[in-house]
Image (cartoon, rainbow, N blue to C red; front, side):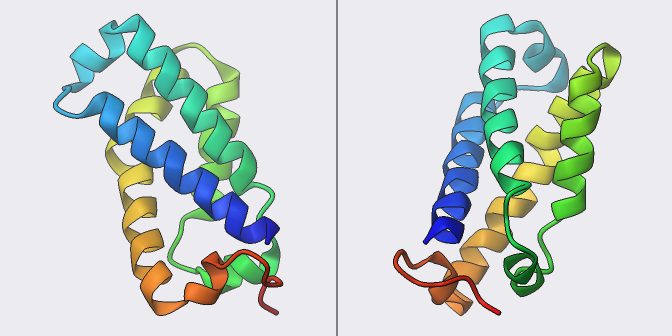
Amino acid sequence: MLEAAILSIIEEAGVNVLTLTEGLEEEEFLSTRLTRAEVKRQFVVAAGVAGKISRSTRSALPELDWEGWEAALRRLEQGGSAEDEVLWFAVRSLIPATLMWLRLYRKARPELFAYGKEAPG
């Protein structure tokens, strides 16, 4: 059940980020203080819970870039110019890829997304 909740949080935060940034180019995104701050908040939520996914669930979802999420969060926490790079990478690459794989896995492995079930393994 916890694993399904974590996957739902990642998915919801990812959808929120894509909705907030739809149609924005990098320069526009980086200059929109409120949008950028909310994208950062949503990303930190998703990355934080992604780090709590069990090894067995990670193994069951191998195409998701779990290490990428962890590395991006570490770089974001460093602040400075790295923050801009990390957020734009998340908006244009990490989050869209994650959402695509989650949609595919939801169809192929629905048990991973079912509440009330134990984690695989």
